[in-house]
Image (cartoon, rainbow, N blue to C red; front, side, top):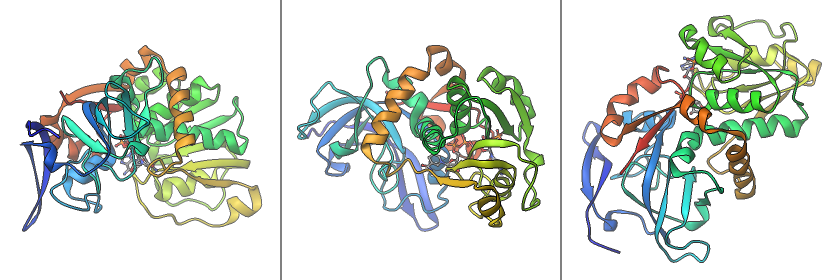
Length: 329
Ligand code: NDP
C-alpha cells in the first residue's frame, strides 16, 4: 500500500444529508480488498444519479466513493486469479453503494468481483457498455433462454437511456424486430440508428390501461416499471415474455394475473448486481462480439469526474442520451 494521494469524488455525511466533493485520498481510505486497480474509466448510471443526489438509500456508509462500475488495470494483487497489468472490469456487487467504487483514480476490491476484459475490448469500451449495457445483454439473454426467438417483435422501454439504447442495439443485431418506446420523440433518429424499426410514444403506455390489450409483442425489455410495465404485460402476445430490470418510471407494479393465466406470459426478473459470475462472463463475451466501434461511438459521450454532480439531476430527469463514460485519469 502506498501513501501516494489520488483524486476521488467522495461522499461525506453531513447534518442535512450528504456532501459530494472532489478530494485527494490515499489507499488507506479504501476498503480492504485483495486487488488494487488503477481506474481508467467509470460510467454514469441511473443508480449513480440517485447516489449523488442522496436518494434511494444507495450509499450505505460514509465516507464513500460512489461509482457502481469501472474498468482499469490491476496495480497490485494478492488474489491468485489476477496479476499486475491485467485489464479488468467491475460492475455490481454493491460497489459504489456499500464499498468504495469507480469515481476515483484507484479502487481496491475483492478479486472474485472482477472480470478480465474479453480480448479486443478496451477499458473505454467496457465502460461504454458498463452496468447498463451488461444489464441490457442479460435481458436479451433472459428472453432468449425463455424461447423468444429472433424475428419476433420486441419492445424496449426507456429506449434512449443507457440500458435501453444498448438493448435496442443488441436485440436488433441478434435479429429481433425492435420497437423503441421513448418519451423523447427528438431521439427517434438516434434510436433508428441503433436498429429500432419503429418508435412508440411513451404516452401510449404511461397511464393505467386495460388488463389485456391487443397481442403486440413477442417479448420486451422494460426499464421503466409502473404503468408502463403493466401495459407492456397486457400487450404481450401468447407465450411471450418481458424482462424487467428497472424502475425509471416507478417501483410500483399494479397489474392483474390475466396476462399470466390467459396468455402464458412470463415476467422475467433481471438483476446485474449479484448476477452469477459464469452468466456475467458469458454476457461480456457476447457484448464484445456483438458491438462494433461504430456502436460505441453512437451510444456514448465522455465526461470527467468534475462534471458528475451536475449530471445527477439530468440522468434522474431522463435527459441523458445513451451511455455516459467517465474518464477518470
Ligand atoms: P437512464 O437514465 O440512462 O435511462 C432511463 C430511461 O428511462 C430514460 O432515458 C428515459 O428514456 C426513461 N425514463 C426516464 N424517466 C421516465 C419516466 N418517468 N417514465 C418512463 N420512462 C422514463 O438509466 P439506466 O439506463 O442506467 O437505467 C434504467 C433503469 O434500469 C433504472 O431504473 C436503473 O435503476 C435500472 N437498472 C437496473 C439494473 C439491474 O441490475 N436490474 C442495472 C442497471 C440499471 P426515454 O427518454 O427514451 O423514454
